Every structure is written in C-alpha cells, then in structure tokens.
Length: 167
Image (tube, rainbow, N blue to C red; front, side, top):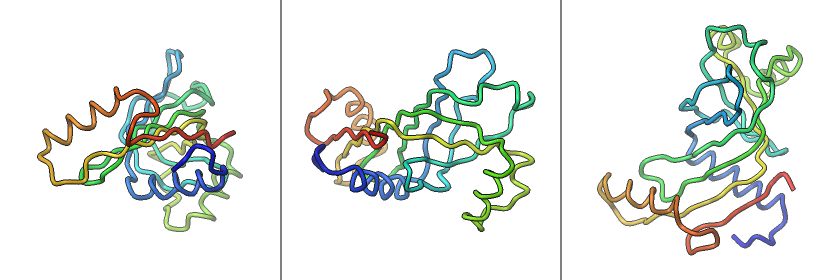
C-alpha cells in the first residue's frame, strides 16, 4: 500500500491487519521506575481515531502511582499469518469511570468484572511498520528467521510499508 494513500485508507488497512493478527507484545518504553511491564496482549478493538484498546494484568501497586501516559511499542505477530506489524505510539491507562463505562457500552462482550484484575490501556498509533513475510509453508525455525531478518530490513525495502496514522 503506497505511503501517499489517505489516512482513512491507511487506518482501515491497519485495523484489518491488527484484527487478523490480534495479539501483540506490549512494551512500555517509559523511563519511569514504576511502569506497566512488558506483556502479551490481545486487541479488543482498534477505533476510528487510531486507538488500539487492550487489557494488561493489573499490577500489585496502586495504578494511580503509575504514569498515566507513556511511549509504547506494540509488536503484532501470529504464527501462520504472512505479515507482522510494529506500532509505536502514546499509551494511556484508562482510569476515568466515564471512559471505562463508554468502553463497556461499545464493547458489550467485555465483562465489567474484568476491571478487578486487569487495566484498560489505549494506544494512539503514531507510526506503524507493516512487514510481509513468506507465504509458503515454513518450519517454525524458517518463520522465526524470516521474522528476525525482516526486523532489520532497511525501511522502504520490498515487503514493508510505514504508516503515520496520527498525522
């Protein structure tokens, strides 16, 4: 998908790919001492404003002691899918009761009791790098090598695109 395409088309493309892959490794890239740990997350939704919504396990510490916004990286990858995404953006811990209620209203398949054990996080996508991997059947080892080599592939090389959905 060319970089010059309009933002709504880019966002729709990213929404489809994130729905397809669904799971990601969440990296809180803050320098804060107290921060949400690196976690495997499942996407609940990607809204029309470019926010990726998901839950992380609630830490033992009081969530109000954490930075409420922080830099984030999400690595979307799933075995058997011929692509992966690296998303960078700004994340927020959702603590406002009105926003949590609105989220539940729009996602009626989410049980409200989840907030006892989990923390809702939203990430505004600012940059997304899309990589295609080989589509032929590969062993797990070949797939892993393809994934790692694609991570170090120069920007703009074959099989990758960079998007700036927040622009």
